[in-house]
Amino acid sequence: MQVPVYNLAGEVVKNIEIDESVFGVPANESVVHQAVLRQRANARHGTADTKTRGEVAGSTKKLFRQKGTGEARAGSMKSPLRKGGGTVFGPHPRSYRQSMPKKMRRLALRCALSAKAGDGELLVLDRLQLEKPRTRDMEQILGTLGVGSTALVVTESPEENVIISARNLPGVWTLPASLLNVVDILGHKQLLMTEAAVRKVEQLWGLEPSQRENNASL
Image (cartoon, rainbow, N blue to C red; front, side, top):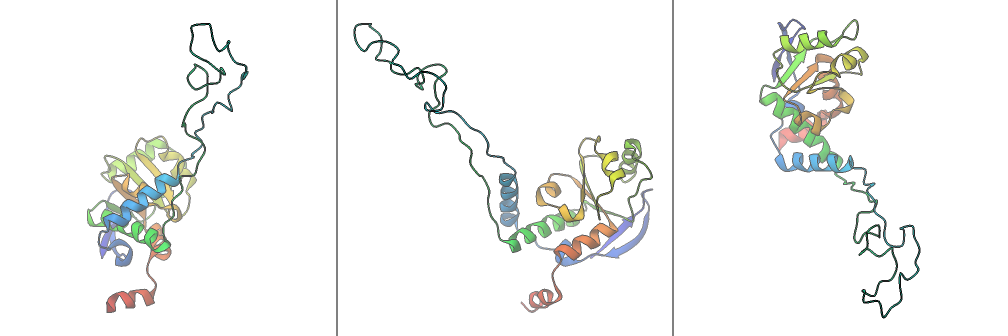
């Protein structure tokens, strides 16, 4: 599969061949959906906590005598029935973590990348290096490339000037290639990658030669 490579002026400078085992995988919605649920669940802290009647601070003395007052037979002030008392069946710290096989995680990422490439939402840049951090420069580059909504900018390694220049732009997020994930890919309309980042992604998540031969024989 061939894709054009743009410079920062929005001009096509060349065409490159990208690995179809990464950018040309058939859609597998169930695997992608499971990967999204897993990533979002693993991001939850699970630290919500409420106090039971045994954890609420206060006296356990019976509020008034059992009979003769005309009131209900009240016990402790920490009862869940009273204001300031404990909570019944409230949340307590827990783990929401989900597991997923490594092969399925890799497949989900390749499916997400393939969807962007297939829909024409993948833009490859020859380079993305800024001399100094400046939001206006980053905004101008995105405007020249025709990025009008949300965008995920992926570089081979963390570029400090790029990160600082893009962090104040609404809907724009930057990532190094090694931290690419399904949620960020699907959560942004455009996927901007440098040519070096594309090669890094192919190196990390592409199929081995032996795997390609096995797939070809099936």
